[in-house]
Image (cartoon, rainbow, N blue to C red; front, side, top):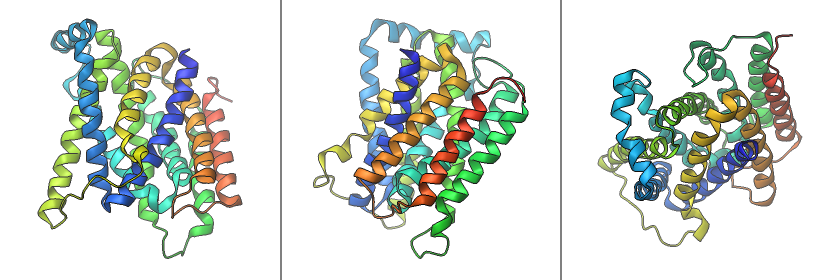
Length: 303
């Protein structure tokens, strides 16, 4: 079940990208869409407090901090989650789900080397291997191939691709922190609630800034019903990640979840494309090379 859960996490991540991208297109403001999605996720995640085990685990957080099992800054992974959802909402309408996902995967693969080397995850320090370095290089190449046919196009933004790469790098840190919280408390739900709490605060602060500069909230009604489900999807996949990572480790989780992200992202761009989707052989080749990069990273022994 944990292995299936890791793959489902990837599928849900790609699905949330399409959902939040649709809401962003309707509202005309990606940060507003992200703030709505995360706020809904926060409300839903607080329902976990109805569970006795969750309340007990939350009460155990101060003790875990005092014992040194957790550092205070490891409770702030939700900041990355908020920025990730914000990037989703802003860039998916411009780039399509598959390009967004390939860029995120490249960032995740590259930064996982650093995350493992310094021991941010629950498994502690992991060695840097030649395979992992080659994997990161292939992942970066995959991004370049996926977007190579769009350089020079008026609608293409290299800054948007770079933003996706950076938030992808951040997700490896977020997953490592969530895994540590789960190990320290014995439950995945406290990390989920903390993610939505800190992420919501960050997104609402950013949205308040856009409000001050002249953008006022839009009416939420009118978009397709499924465009409002990003928060619910986010709650589900963050719980899955917090549950699975301590069981199967960051590496296996990353491999299976990225496989889910890539396959679902390409499918979504076929059956439900955005206005920014450009489905050609470059994109398919980029997704394929990203699969190769992830598979190479999964090899535990250096070549």
